[in-house]
Length: 588
Ligand SMILES: *[C@@H]1O[C@H](CO)[C@@H](O)[C@H](O)[C@H]1NC(C)=O
Ligand SMILES: *[C@@H]1O[C@H](CO)[C@@H](O)[C@H](O)[C@H]1NC(C)=O
Ligand SMILES: *[C@@H]1O[C@H](CO)[C@@H](O)[C@H](O)[C@H]1NC(C)=O
Ligand SMILES: *[C@@H]1O[C@H](CO)[C@@H](O)[C@H](O)[C@H]1NC(C)=O
Image 1 (spheres, rainbow, N blue to C red):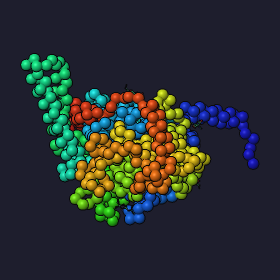
Image 2: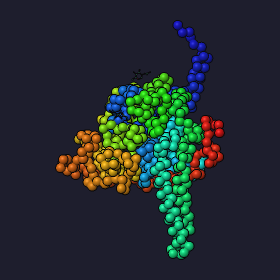
Image 3: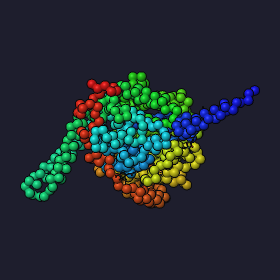
Image 4: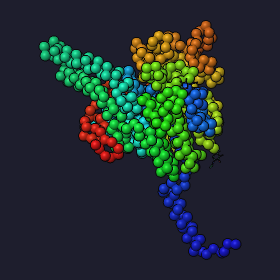
């Protein structure tokens, strides 16, 4: 039996309760907000939809990803906004087609090529990380960024993750490339050296002509113009020069927040370091809602794989690397589950775009596989370039072991996580993604995507129309890459498909497929075989027209000027150009 409470004790208890309550309101952290889940987003690099067990691969072992799908929702029509890293990731983080932020390209180079380039995710774009940060989330990016570093000076870090809503960053500001490992099979240098050298020569010739014209009064030209050309030529020359073997020092670096910790990176430790960072972030953030974007360096070449996983798969080094990536996924989920965060964490897994068919060494495949889908990385229109694995898990909220075939986009994650965090998406700009929650929970049957626009660089190559009433999934291709050698289904000769000029074929009328009947885009329809042909094409045309009306010109982040290497922007942990450091803090 309880004794009669003494008045003073009651009062004291009441007072301390009130103090606690006030404290809670101040700190907001002592009562975890049940309606605000943690958010763990996992992004693989260059992973093909055909590389994953639960998407039909029966020879690569991906038990952890398969298990994730078992416990959640598997999206079978999850579409990247671009078929290469930089624009796809820009779209993912901003919820907008990359053309809206100037993050896609009108030239052959469609990605950020140097840490020392000036292009990157514009500071006035609002990532979901920034909104979640404002909503009280602890935000972190661990792994690959590839969206630029500096604008005007070596340490302005205007494009850096910490300037885009992440409160913690550990990883590569750039991307893994073959050069990080050694000199063989240079990924950037070979083609880039050629391009830069060509530009250098052309501009040098132009400058010479202008100079002669000016000096002999043959034609009038301002000194300023000549100086402008000369500067451009000089930059190309520097880029050409610096791509000789310097890539490893300039690009393959690791940073913790604003500091460089390894320049160049020591690849044999990287996987372990990234995992350790991830687990320790989860550990120290378990009491507050967190957003953690783990952006794997796997399964991009050079396929850094630890000893334990080498030679384990039946698909060579590529398969080993995929299996190691799956193991990493398992480790992350284990960290979440062990900390009791399983039911309070929204987990998402995807790849940034399709597998890289042309990645080969000799006859050995070094890139991914896109299953029944035609094409791959770098191809903006063909399904294999943009259809990726997409899995979401949130036990207790989302159904388990569910498959959704509706069209969804990587850009949908933006409004989805903003909604989960109780925030609102920016109202002053177009957001192309849609909140996925109603679809994932099963409260609606159809996704909100009626049309999707498939860009290759800044060029619109194809359009998808999900005709909800009939269930048809039309796709019209206006432009397709020219495969080489003839008969191949990729661009093996040039090593990668390009988006314009002689490297593409234009189609008028467009090639039309119904993916619901022909997911491999094997048999184009014609007015003879498809009575709706003309009606479908004209409906799609109208959608393109409307879409164009929503675009406005923005500065091009990946222009020729913005992607060349600029010595004054090169992140450097020593005194430029002597940039090298090993391990945290100590320089050699
Ligand atoms: C599984 O993935 C490997 C490696 O990408 C690929 O070679 C193989 O064809 C795939 N198997 C299936 C059934 O898709
Ligand atoms: C987590 O959610 C599942 C599915 O709703 C439920 O069975 C389980 O009891 C929950 N676990 C906890 C610790 O709440
Ligand atoms: C939890 O977050 C939601 C959305 O931000 C808010 O409306 C609600 O008041 C919060 N609840 C608690 C207990 O803090
Ligand atoms: C960002 O700035 C550029 C250049 O001033 C502008 O064109 C663009 O519309 C701005 N973007 C947003 C989302 O405000």
